[in-house]
Image (cartoon, rainbow, N blue to C red; front, side):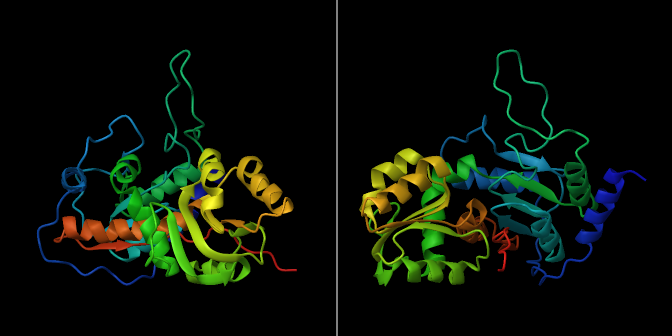
Length: 302
């Protein structure tokens, strides 16, 4: 038996161990995954981006859908929990098969940029795809169009999860009760259930009254422009040599601020809970829930 077969079998076994509260049926004739996406597109509004990342990534679009689960990342654990809860359409923000291509990709045309992609025989790709097929799941990526129309929901969802949503000063800036950076970091860790994915740099004793929230990726230009608007900047992920070292040098130069990163996926989970709440209003006949991928890192001891 090949190593690929062993991996595939193990993934399928994992799918059978799900334990989650099942979604309650609403009693109506189930819509197909494709019909759900048609309605989603109409309700989301705007010009639908067709040349980006969104679309069906696994499963048959004509599958009748019993329930929907939203997530920042359709990990094996999320897929397993969704199936156990009776949700067979997974709406994910990030790729299911890890790269921009969401799995193996055809060769790029001459002169065109080729993005990293898995091999067709990659054991993790094949096993994860087999798990999805075995459980009758359908995976739809909703990234470009969700962020184009509802980006504010991602930030608001993170602020709400942290209990910081009451005083929003602009698209990313919030005012919170005065605390220290160290206490704010402990608060973030506890509220989001973080383990090893949290990192902080800067002045841990700084007084924090204003925070900038950037779920997902915080680019260097935005951080350089806005870093002094807040006492603490919280992002999903950054480039270390651009953002982290900038914050470290600012601290060394005497600035009393801090930069905190919590992981791209963990920072986006709260926003995808907002996506589930929105979908529930668009599809009242279909049960919808959010299944967070959570902090994927573990924390070393000692």
